[in-house]
Length: 217
Ligand SMILES: [Zn+2]
Image 1 (cartoon, rainbow, N blue to C red):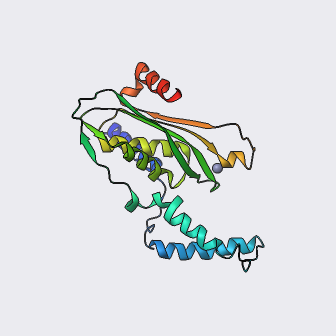
Image 2: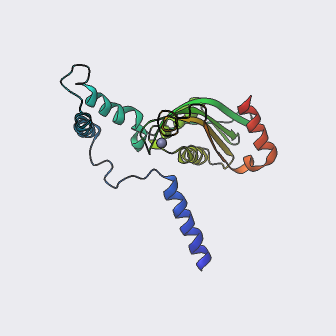
Image 3: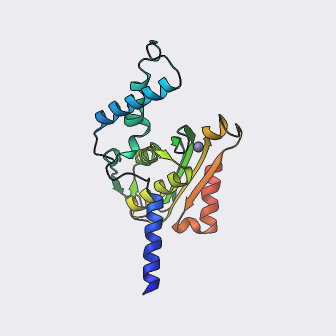
């Protein structure tokens, strides 16, 4: 049946677009080996730029950058760093919208390797289970700590929350400034980029407006 095939094919396309493109051997090296390798390569970049690495202000930079990449700003590439999420019984019978807004967001543009800085707003309709609020922050951080495009980041957070809670009624909006737009290229320091992923109940006009009203207040 060609229809089934098509649907399946589309689903696969969708999934591969949603996932951060990774090499099959992404974890053949451990963190320490990656740091050593990146340190070597970053040394070469700095030397190519003509910098004198014997200067005591510069000498530790390759090591510092390598550690920062692996252990901090790109730590979300490693599934081992995915936050474990505990769900709680919704004992108090809360059945309305929960919005966690203005979550600090730091990511890195995968096209230029410069920062994306902004705020994430995450909402869901409480149903059977509720999630600890700090876990929402940790999920945002985990997906942000990768080379990203804002559209994929928005969807990855939404999909993770949907599968964790086992519901479709999830909304994610991100408002962020891209340093690749501000400090180079068009050099625009006043614009920001807004993306959203709305599903389930949030596709209804009234629920969507309520969410937008909460996050703009
Ligand atoms: Zn960029």
